[in-house]
Amino acid sequence: MKTKKFMSLILALVMALSLAVPAFATTATLETTDLSDMSKIDTAVTQVNGIYQAPILALTVPKKINLLLNPYGVNVTINKDTAIEDDVQGQIVSADNLIISRSNVPIEIKATATGTITSGGGETGAWTLSKTPIASNSVKKEALVYMVFGTVDTSTINDATKVTKFIKTTKTSSDTPYEGLNDRNDIHYATVTPATLAEVTFVDATTKKDGIIIQAGEGKETWLNQSLAECSVTETVNNGTTTYSYNSVSAVAFKLDGAMVANPKDSSWGKDDKLAISVAWKFVPGPQANSSGNGGVAQADATVTLTGGTTATAAIDALDVSGTIANQTIAITLPAGATGLTLDGATNFQVTPTGGTNNTAANVGIALSGNTITLTGADIKSVLTETGITAGSGTITLKYESDDQQGGTPDVTVTLTVNFTNVAGN
Image (cartoon, rainbow, N blue to C red; front, side, top):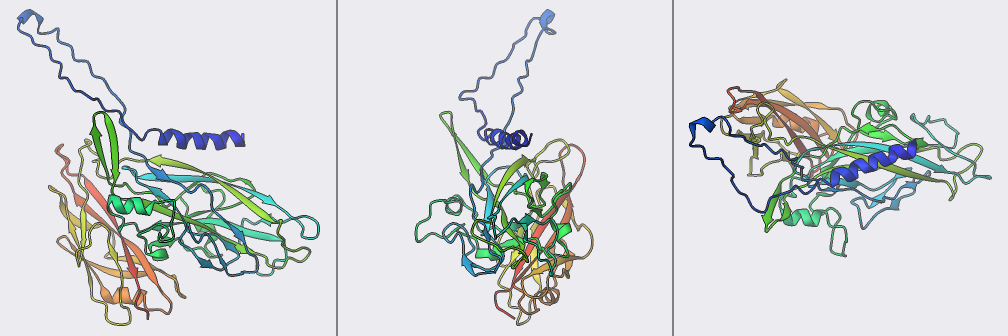
């Protein structure tokens, strides 16, 4: 049954990917019926032929990644040529790896992880995978291993040439992994601590989660909080042949982390202690973001413009938190026919800082005037001024009225992600 279930997931992915190329007619003929005889005007027939319109699906998924069981926390270099992470230190070590989409529809992700333990036996003894945080006084030969997921800022990968470099798999000495990313500053993982483990990752997830706790044997299918956004794709049909130009990408990051009992009481760790993990992915396409929910009439997305001219992604980088931070302005350009931009909820939003000694979310004030949002600089500084803080991120949810050309004015909701980066130090 496990084999059948695993194969069903693989087949689902294969079937989804097989829908990448829609059918196009090479010639078009308008067939009509002319009527001039009064006695035959009720004999006209129109035949409707419905065909399926497939989305453009283009996904890149890592085939193999490396994992180190490192109970003594030795500083190591892993995946230097194929992933972002270089020198790392921890008991469970893997590089940052990306699932990349160039698809023209948003995609939800589900995953099922299966762990297989190999034990050295003899004096080294068998070991087990824990489903809960490892106690500080544990003397068992055990490890907690979990896969944690994160969002990726790919806003700078905004034309076909950059997309090609970003997904390039064969690297030369001059190439950088995932070219265009600002190293790990553009990746934001969910925060995982022993106290939050049950909320962040859970082995029997029935709701969306930020990760998966690995166990021996097949785990439960987990629906991830992180998803792949709709990307910009240009289709060209020439003599019946369709080609695609991918002008943007979306990505979800994942890595493995956890903890081990470094010195078990009755055994020790050895070179024959290994863990193999197989992850079966399921990708679920959704409707395009610019499709109206009432009548199916296409609606344009709101355009976001930052002070300084950056477009599309609300990313505020290179803040000098050692000095005064000016209020940050985000201008929203609404689609034609759209009116009534409002904040959906409170006049502040939560920013969660990363790095350093503080990961507690804090409020940043918002003021909305017309189609312009102003973020309070003093509040931004208060989030990012504690020693060691390197970045923070939060979201703003807006609503506006959009004419659906069907006589109604439904609400359209837009969620903007705002990233703050403290690169000037404290």
